[in-house]
Length: 90
Image (cartoon, rainbow, N blue to C red; front, top):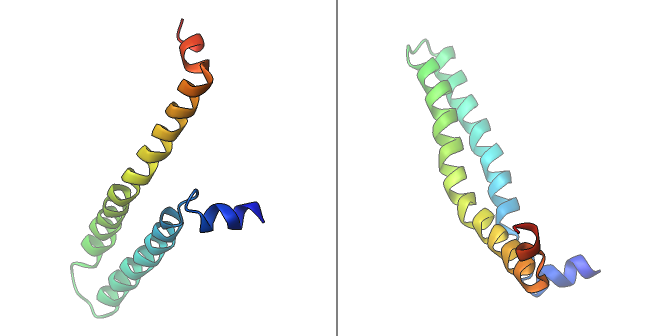
């Protein structure tokens, strides 16, 4: 129940999980597009496979970057509040 409460009170972000689902859907779409090009004898099927996969990955990494950096900032804040950050670095 506390997980649901955390989600409803915006303590836990849902968007990173949605972005991961959308990433896999985008990757599946990229593979399907490359397969479609291969079946229709288009020479660029391998470019769509390689560069499409890389581009999909990079786009979603930029999207997740904001959420991951927020998580790290929360960790730093918690360490500073407890004082363990100062003790570990001495």
